[in-house]
Image 1 (cartoon, rainbow, N blue to C red):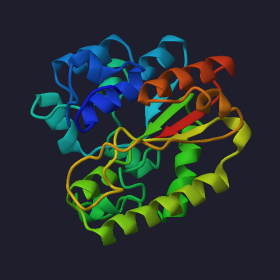
Image 2: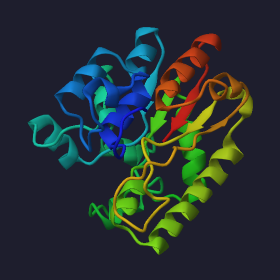
Image 3: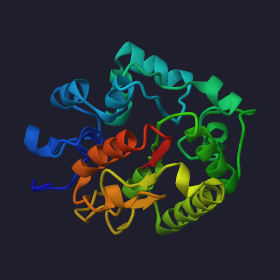
Length: 253
């Protein structure tokens, strides 16, 4: 986006959700968590806020355990840019009860991490295909639904090639389920990223590669034809929603 250096999560996510060239505005790529300048940009305007302001419904489909919420509420942990965007719109970050009820998903889609990493013994676990179908079903409850699969970043920074391949196989399974459930006429699925790193595991840093974006659904050309940088994602989704009368749309990154 016209700035030298490796893209970073906070500024990339903020650019994706505000439509503004955040790295240029703050003079650098910044991350992983947003600094005060980025938080101010997100507070002023972001896609979640725009949808809510026009009477639409929006949600982040990922849920978090109690200790995450405690850390955020106490100030010991900063929300990521996309989490901050949700909060600035007056929307909740989902908790463990949404995991149990099936109204939200875990960051790994299947829920296995809630058992292996967080110590839960009775939370739901889905196959990748089941998780993909559930993600689509949940997205139908909102005009704009967002899901962040941040594990690609974890593996990109400190994972092995085998772990990267396994994660891509998981993604393939989730998308198989999502596409089996999805109807092209009901909205759009947008798959993108705030930066690259998983595609090059020869080092532990982000890459300067272009970010690929996949758009699925009838009317996808309305976004794809004007897509050049991350700053084009938010206005593309916003225009699509306005032009279709806020039919349900799912955006996954």
